[in-house]
Length: 406
Image (tube, rainbow, N blue to C red):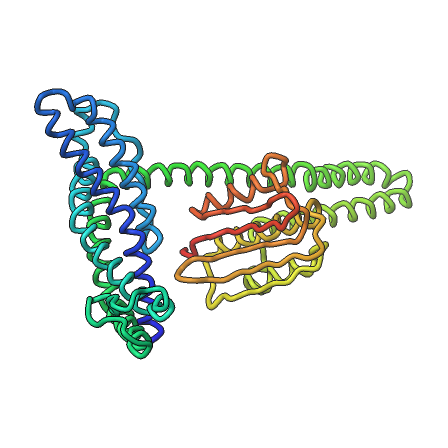
């Protein structure tokens, strides 16, 4: 309980301090906007309208980034329309103007109150350190009571600072919420803009899914054409040779039939391998945790697996996760020069999180054909997120987030 209250209080103080900066700038911009409006009445300020609106957009984007640190991310709507009439008619611009008016006045007052309380608490807490430097008749407390007449008074002042701190722990969160509310209400994207962004994202995901599906079909076609089909052609040729040799040389025909049987068995094994690559039986038999443990055991470098999976994901998601880890470990063994690798898998709130790290020399680049393009396409096809960090000198970290839905 105490830990939670202290945590909320400290977070609110950080919010008030950071909000004080944007609120102070917003107050200055409010004055500039008022002057521009007044000048526009006589035509002089019309040329300043677009620059002022662009400045407001920059400040609003800073506020969106600040709010995103303590809640859902707020996406910037992009640049202000190029024409003055379009900009003034834009709903997002109008909401930003309302936010500016509130944040530059009420938001500044709330932030200023919080900052004054914080400074008062700090001032009273450190007063004994300042006491030797102050004149004898200096005010002892931040609230203007008492004089610094003795060390006993100076040592008692931090108790008032402690009281300020306790007050801030309970008053700070409501003040921070009051200051954050206008931004949360007025700086959110226009519903139509948000929908268009989602449609664009789904379009890209659909294209990635189709590309991944086409690539998988090409892989299966190559496996059948270059492997099993050639084996079966060889079986046909050998059976024809055996039939022709059966009458004149039964011993040679038997030898040819043995070769045909070997070729048929090889073709059957390759067909089984192709079918297993379409839907891995190891996932059905052992689950994702067991399948990844098997991959780690077969890796060319020592690999540790950390798994936290309270339940099963959709079969397609587990297959994608298996493919990602398999490709990543193949890259580690072939290209990284690593001495050790780690695979971490966990499931939280309907999402599957994968992380593959190695202590190699780094420098992984998707443009050099290291399999990262294929990984990215498979992840995008499932509406997932991929992040790669591989500075020169290492280490390399591949992080993937996938939905666990069916």
